[in-house]
Amino acid sequence: MDKKIQAMVVFGTRPEAIKMAPLVLELKRHNRLEPLVCVTGQHREMLDQVLALFGIVPDFDLNIMQSGQTLTEITARSLTGLEKVFNQARPDIVYVHGDTTTTFAGALAAFYGQIPLAHVEAGLRTGQKYAPYPEELNRKLTGALTDLHFAPTASAKKNLLAENVPEAQIFVTGNTVIDALRHTVRPDYAFSRPELNGLPSEKRLLLVEVHRRENLGAPLEAICRGLRRVAAENPDVLMVFPVHRNPAVREPVNRHLAGLERVLLIEPLDVADFHNLMQKSTLIFTDSGGVQEEAPSLGVPVLVLRDVTERPEAVAAGTVALVGSAADRLVETAANLLRDQAAYAKMANAINPYGDGRAAERIVAATNWYFAKSGARPEDYSVN
Ligand code: UD1
Ligand code: UDP
Image 1: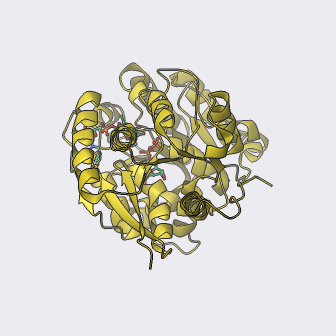
Image 2: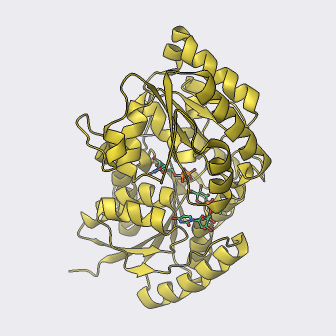
């Protein structure tokens, strides 16, 4: 038998793990491919939660996380570690995901090693250098180093074409986060966190997830003040907020929201708990990218606590609203949706602009096609 293609999947943070897990599982199903997993450990606990859920044991773990690391430190330590791993394992292809510092370091290390690079979730853009920061430039720089661009949507492909990426290198696959969602959401789901099984059914659930670097400082303070008012002014809600591990997030969140009536601050949830809690929610408040993609397919309206988004599809469809970080706007938008049933119903449409659950399958098909250099090119994903 021919030598197997060594396919090295690199990730380091929670969202990358959630979105790469379906790819790792799919690669394992194909005889010609041998998946190798390298984690930088940019996140530790939040990454390990995802690995455990999907039963993935990394072949390499750089374990780089330290409290309060700068972007330069994360990049430098990932790059040095990845060079050694790539020299040792000599992969035939490297996959990175999205827009984190791990992503960019993985892309650069693959380039230095002259290893073909595949970018999953390619082509998202806001067009603004510092929004989101540093993600917009991480994904642009990664794109410049990429051989196979796996764009989740047609509009992401359009962004790449506008930057003169050759069309032959772009595959529209859908987003692997929808594949992950298919694994996790169940009607009869029992939460692993006991406190979530006993939530009062008469309360409307408001779910919060905020962590973005560009929101740290004054915007996060304003968001917390807004959330505090939403909980205070709406007696029939329960706000559940799994708080990101970043101390720069934890400190203001605890200062503004700990101990309040109708606010439950909890540790980050494993992704199955989080997805199933999303499904039970009336409204979601977030600056997270992944949550903006997941919620539309669950039919849950999202208030995005940012001024711009690289995920315009659900905004166009009306299920996601950009509200920024000003407290007044957040409070007014939430109050209106909680009061006005027609306005709420208009936003609570289940739509699937981000995928059909078969993105990993398409990525693997494209990989096989790329190495076989023959046969039919896999078909692009399109929304029907
Ligand atoms: C990172 C990514 C961001 C992504 C986000 C998803 C970069 C620069 N940022 O941001 O694109 O949206 O992940 O969550 O790549 N920490 C822990 N335990 C954990 C995870 C984090 O203690 O499991 C703490 C550490 O002290 C760490 C801090 O959180 O220093 C910040 O983590 P970092 O990866 O630098 O940035 P994020 O804001 O998480
Ligand atoms: N998520 C999770 N547990 C939580 C909060 C979020 O598993 O307590 C999941 C969420 O469903 C989504 C992903 O984490 O798939 C998003 O990660 P994050 O918000 O950290 O990063 P982003 O998507 O903004 O890059």
